[in-house]
Length: 285
Image 1 (cartoon, rainbow, N blue to C red):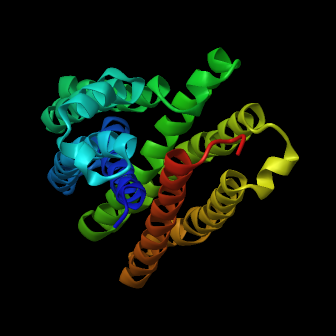
Image 2: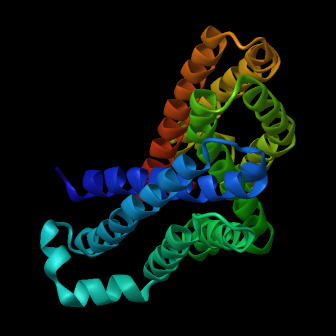
């Protein structure tokens, strides 16, 4: 496996694990009081995600030195590793690891811990402002808050999917139906922010329409297609399956879990595309 491919795999898995940890903390902070039987399972999921993300972030940072040398020898090269840590990507990795440790500690019962979880999730999203294409843009002051909003809502959405899956398995039908309805109302306002922020980020970063035919642009269009499919699945849950949960029919909950699982797979695919874009290409290529 080449250094670039290994870096993409680690980056994609790291994105999934760290955003899952952040999103679980956000979900619990917003909806934790509505839960009856599934709080501890969600806290375990969040802590496990944070714990898995830590070595993934560390391994990706080690591969940064290997990418500088062009082969795996850079992993064991102290000079390359020092150089990688001194850069903005190294700083971002250290901030992410600190945020993940905070999330690992904060994912437990109590209002103060819920607040700490939100701080950890926001710090984690903010770490992406320290590196990447937006840092070199002349529109950085505009792009930074857009990117923060984009990542914060993506984390909330990703973390909500396994949480809702757990809810449909553990909670009574009435609790499940009311929680899904409340989540859908909030998501109806938040999730479009992903598209709005994404469009504005692409407008600022891409040099022109021709860039959509380049590898970065093709992957970006793939992300747009994935997002459209996600919105279609979310609409099924909100307008069809969600209201039907009140019937108490276990088949409805089972269908919702299938849709949630499909959404989760799609989000992971979008994050894999993002890992490829940010590792190999730039908007002006």
